[in-house]
Length: 122
Image (cartoon, rainbow, N blue to C red; front, side, top):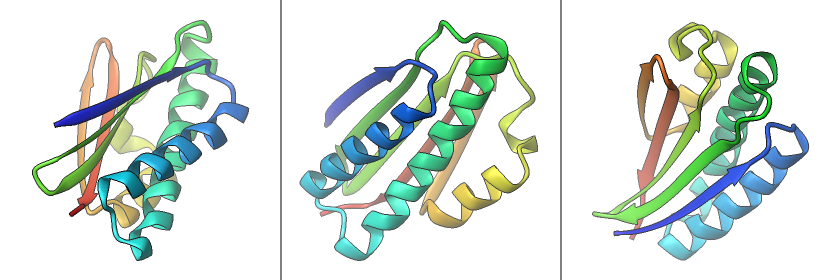
């Protein structure tokens, strides 16, 4: 199982970079071409959500991505350290992510929230 980890400052401009890195790793992981836009958009939405939470609650903390391939899946975990409302309550943002990700797991704790999305890969 191979993992690429990325941490970035909680600035909206870095969401684009996170989407580009995710797309590149997804291609290398064998995600089918028709799914690449869904991967890119879901990760962008999850990163935007995390950046917004960090800007309100912990602007100095970085947002973290873990991009993993293995077991026929490509997964992306977007982690924030903001102690904000649970991710399930994010309304439109979560609805978009749920609609784009093949699978979605939400883990919330006092330390923050991690959204782990996955798609089939070769």
